[in-house]
Amino acid sequence: MRRPPEFAAMAAVAVFAALVLAAGAGAAPLPAALRLERALPHKGVAVEHLRERDRARHGRRGLLGGGGGGVAGVVDFPVEGSANPFMVGLYFTRVKLGSPPKEYFVQIDTGSDILWVACSPCTGCPSSSGLNIQLEFFNPDTSSTSSKIPCSDDRCTAALQTSEAVCQTSDNSPCGYTFTYGDGSGTSGYYVSDTMYFDTVMGNEQTANSSASIVFGCSNSQSGDLTKTDRAVDGIFGFGQHQLSVVSQLNSLGVSPKVFSHCLKGSDNGGGILVLGEIVEPGLVYTPLVPSQPHYNLNLESIVVNGQKLPIDSSLFTTSNTQGTIVDSGTTLAYLADGAYDPFVNAITAAVSPSVRSLVSKGNQCFVTSSSVDSSFPTVSLYFMGGVAMTVKPENYLLQQASIDNNVLWCIGWQRNQGQQITILGDLVLKDKIFVYDLANMRMGWTDYDCSTSVNVTTSSGKNQYVNTGQFDVNGASPRPPYSGLVPAVAVAVALIFGGFSRR
Image (cartoon, rainbow, N blue to C red; front, side):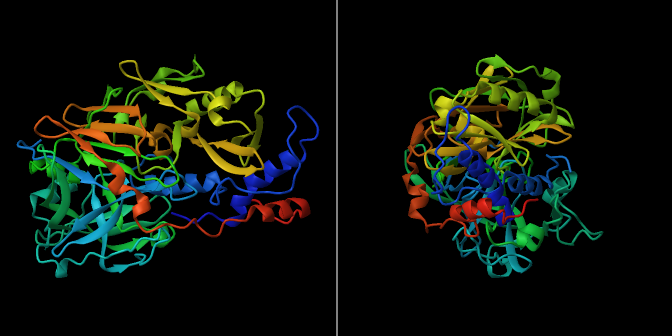
């Protein structure tokens, strides 16, 4: 993940300021005051930077061009981070590994399968984080329950078949892995088996401390953007369907059901809910998962903006090796298939309130309004197989870039997947919704929800357990200050007046 360059942060705001200062002529005049301020201190990072960061994540997954019985209960994980790309731009959780156990911060990623953490020694691994969290290094030599996985192990053989492991000629050599990102950064290491500790919600409405032996990655090398500290975490927690995912491992051990759910808070404070179990709430609707896919693919059939179906050939969304719609919590923004992007943006632009001013900044469609987005912008509906709709509110497709007095600059956060017909629904879309990944029945469900409140989850006894998310509120953790390095808004005004800023 790259820290946003200062001049990129200025570009959209400068165009916005120019529009406001020149608003004396034409309809809906805007105040020409030079007092500039942000609604929040972290706004203004360029969207193209966010695209680059998403592409770095997608590189290892190829997304962008360029049941055991006797389940004991529901495994409960805390959630921190937020969807706000100018604040954090990712969600992460904490896992406890080893004996004695240590806690590690790992990104929640439904677009990959493997849990891996940085190990000691490690080349290129950051030792501090701009997220104001304490990073740790796992050391298998100091854990009494740790053992390295050899290439002769059946679990390594399974990982080799999915290209998630590499081996030398000797069966006794360590089972290794290498994940490479699209921008050249990457990580490599070897697999170990050790104890994971977690909280389990039981059928008797009690929470128990539980543990299980799992296989995970021990990363001893990182390169490229993974070496940077601004948004550094200890590793990545893959929630995919393959045999070595923690979801699959705990289910095969009879620890948790073959279903997991999340509810990611969209506020700047972020946080939310993450359980290996099924959240059950009124309003949940389900659509089938596309079988035999490496990712969580859905059958998107049409897009409706302001009640009007977009003129997009439905075959554009058909799932294949080069097409499809993927749900991925490891992506910050959302990416539309190339052929669907222009109809989407054109429909949004045509449907905004007459009081909204339109402008294009660095290739991105943006808008200026002093009204609420809900009253000024249309609602979008995505229709999936079975006629199931996903409501996309303006906050789920717009990004706030800046504000001047009462006027706010919003830009469309959904990006064109250049030259590709793959659609990716990232955190911008997933926030403020319950999502249920029902792998036992190969379906996915969702509903709009206030993720700061409690939810009901199904336990193995068939009862519903009330889970209070207050204990996972990020306000209870160490506070994370806004990122430094952003250009103060007053500097943008000076640069605008004197022409003293550079552009890409």
